[in-house]
Image (tube, rainbow, N blue to C red; front, side, top):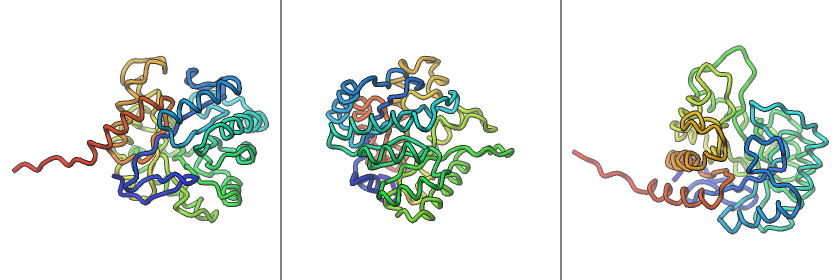
Length: 288
């Protein structure tokens, strides 16, 4: 299992000797990169949430604005807040597992927390200081991602660059008064598009070097579901055709130390995770 410390995401243990957690992803953002993940209407959203929980999701992550780095962001903060508040309220009232809000903005985060969210999934890593203050005030757990910095320097070592960004996000959370035990870190697969290393190679190298990121002392969450680097490897341009690649990358991530997997496809991912966990526990015999 992961050597990083144990966290609690709204009471769900993550890391250490605990089973790898699977987080189901629900979107209400029509502009999402994967249309198959979008749920339109309250009934459809609730049905999808129930199905994910039955399939083994320990948390549900709700997003109301696409954060894909290659898509235009035309959704205002008020619109995102309205979308997110409605969606979180529907899901939180229908299922018994904690709900996470996928947002980088304090206004939508507030709307989600008021609607019943207990975790904030901030892909910007608390770049907005209001988010840290809000999380502390509301006692929300955090999932913090490594997010590319807009600098003139383009790093050539993906793992070292991600480690530095995660360390900075962790420092921001600590400065805001949030306990380490409430924090899980995410290496940001799919978000590094303009570095010295080609974006698909970047993601592959970070996944292969995932175990070194546990030195930060926090459990790691990984989201590879249907992402573009899988399409680059498999020549599958449509996200709908990337399930097999997603499961392969998920198994590798678990083998390398991931403690939480974020996915659109809960049932299939749970099976892949359990097999990978079993293999991770078995050490290969030494040969002379």
